[in-house]
Length: 538
Image 1: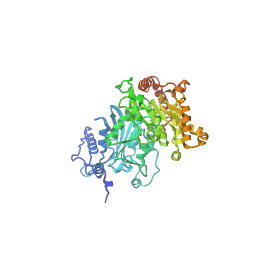
Image 2: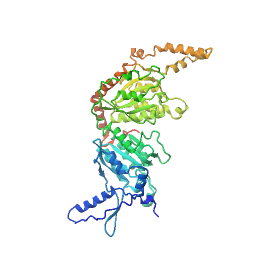
Image 3: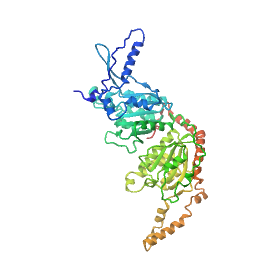
């Protein structure tokens, strides 16, 4: 007896009327085409796969496409890809097994995109329910057209199934052709993925081969042919499928359609000369006291424009897109509420990924520095923090986009130099009066430098008094103004002036720097593919 899986997608019933071909006009063949299209585009309520999709409170694939794209803009590619089944006696189309992926053009906020959407109701998205070339062709088509690629992942996205061995009469060596277009697309166009159910095997790889990915809480699972894993593999979490689509719209709104164009401007609605009084005291005078860095970011950038990327992993580092004077920028900072802001292995990986993304698509970076140094301890050592930290340093040093660095508070040690001086003294840099920097945090550095004297103290009280005396001696030279006297920091600014200054800076780089970067990208991409060795680095 056939299983439900065998029956999924095989009972989409045909029309009672057989389209007649009079042999004179093309209306007959077109009627047959429309009959197949109507059947494919209508859900079969009796199909076990469709019923299970709805029982799990998931949208059907075509409902997803309609919800994501601008109204009535979807233009399908491969609309009748699948297996039509006819009654041999009457010639009537009785059922249709559609391919388990829907592909086509559409518009997102008026901008052209290409979409590939898995239909989990047909064999769970496995290859034996699909047409192999359809997703491969679609991803290549998006790259050649230089439009963003959006994947709606649900199932294996055309990944392998042992059931295909029987129909083929042999096994096969997995070919790179199933992912080569995905990798090439990363180098040319924005690629985003929404995880909308169990995402396994090939689909899991596609989720990772994206510039941005989002999964839905209580609906999505990620399996890389094994247990679930989502620590840094997926960027964001959405509360619903609709929220996931909102995040995709937001992410793409900051990026150009391809590396051959600058990021898009938005109409300016927030005054560039806005000065927020709250910024004056947002950094506490007591150095150990925390503050809300996300609040600080929102006070500087255009109102309601900050879109955070990766809030649930590498949490000591804060990354996201925003707008200044209507122009997109990347925002990089630290969260002093998470391990004091010290950068760990995951935070370093997050930094590398984000800086690479901004550099690739030409987004200038607003770099708000409060970096106490690399995380230390046995856990940090096991996680290879310094190795990942070196990758973050290299990404910052080698980025091709302009960086505006504002030192908010701390900049210590090797990690401090990477963030506070990413362009090796050649970039724009200012500091707030709360700046505090050096080779080591002063408290720990004094204890190390004067260890012998401190250990020789007659009592704990005497040791504490000596420590306080030593720190008091260093307090005067600790002032950022002393560093500015030596031109060790180029300028100390009133925090309230940060927005006007960075808005002026971003307007300049968009007019005078980014156009040359676009020309450089055009010179390093051959046709519609990157030159050898110049592909996108994940």
